[in-house]
Length: 192
Image 1 (cartoon, rainbow, N blue to C red):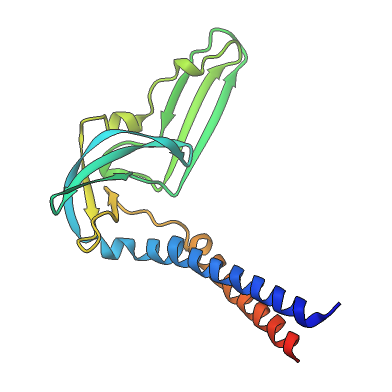
Image 2 (cartoon, rainbow, N blue to C red; image 1 turned 135 degrees about the vertical axis):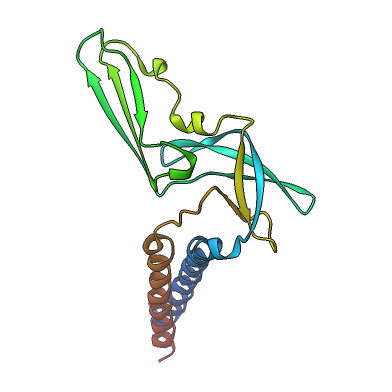
């Protein structure tokens, strides 16, 4: 086998992976780290429904807002994490209940904690009351939206919660740099 061909093949393959990692670092990390600084315009939006997708185990409000005569949608308020604590009672008479650490719109936690208690007999999941997120943001209610005046589609609801930079930016960025170095080494060794 000729190392020259395989060195070029693997060098190009690793460089393509490095470019993909750097794009991910930019798209997920860098843009999200700059989002709060860029979103300087404020408006009021309306909760039109709840998302079909769960974010950290929670369906979030979909807020419709208008900027520069165009209508946009954003999802939020978001949380850094969502924790669900299940408690199962071993008797049939235990009532299902659900509580969370949400209190008011002005005091939203970074980490949403929900506690659910159910009976081990039968499926009491259907008996759980709506989460207090539905109570804080009922469909039809108003919510504050901050958006980027240069790109109004970039927005957040109520307050901005950045994803952890270590996962969204630094790991893909450092991985991309290391892969680029490895790809260059493979290419150079193929020609030596």
